[in-house]
Length: 427
Image: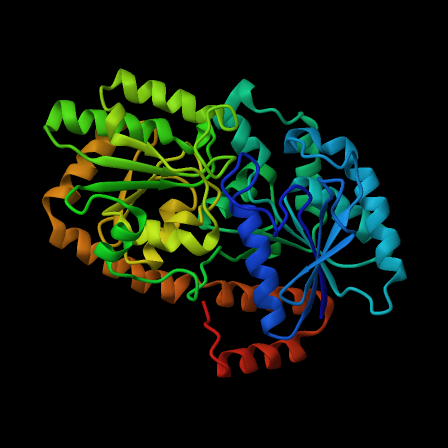
């Protein structure tokens, strides 16, 4: 099949870790890569946000089309909705000129979905939509700080009604689609996110710490991901304060992420806020910001940590817990959304309420006091990640959805069989 992936604000070529660069970038890049590996042709359409970008970039046999829509500068995703008509106009014109027609359009995020609806109406190409985050859920948790207009809700309602398939990334996502958007359950396909086995795998902890210059004799907590308030990094900082004040236990927190390679409060204002909280808690010397790092380096951070912690207010899925599990590191996560699905409480890690530093501190102390339990959870997480959450398996499942909608099921089944025979993983 020839497949168009739309990701208006999240380019697969961007470095993850910034305000608007995270799980969706990783999702699109890996889905595209794995679809190509099982024999499909994939083009990714994303907004051109730099003046010197070519119209077409390439990575790993994938075309990335840098769509001219709005000024060629980086803009917050909350400001992109007015430029989606131009995005759709360009895509329709581009697709009409292609010799081989597209079999499917897979839109990522609601604004990409709006473009996808225009394409569906103009060209009759089946539309698959992955929201990655739902507006009504976001508004519930972020209130007035949600910068998206109310128009988002009506767009999402239309996408739920008219998409040929809506991809739910976890059971909570499916439940929200049904109860908040009146989605038709038979038209929802549950397909999780994943990790790449070649990218994330266990390494020797002492060597990983030596590589990073981390102390060998400290209990180390890792937080990795986008530096925005809803990710709840402040909750992790406060929990370290509770560990010290209430339990007499010291832990070191390393925070990976931000808008620059070196930690910079101007480039990433959230760092300044978090440093202030650390000072208030009397643990400023225990909280270390290390900036953003390329994907090839992240496995060393996961492997060097005693525990990976992620306690967002809400999380449609959450890829970082999978990456930590794939490295054999136990996870403490907020009992929300996709984390509730990927982390098996008491087996691969622990689930705690969001915005509850005392509960998180209790979980941290429990793992620090019982290294055997932590090791057992890490091993169980590794097994669970490999059995349920590989990008290869995600792509194979998506390919079956595409084939069903485009009438290409027989050929797709044959491609999946060939992929497994060549070493691909199933879900």
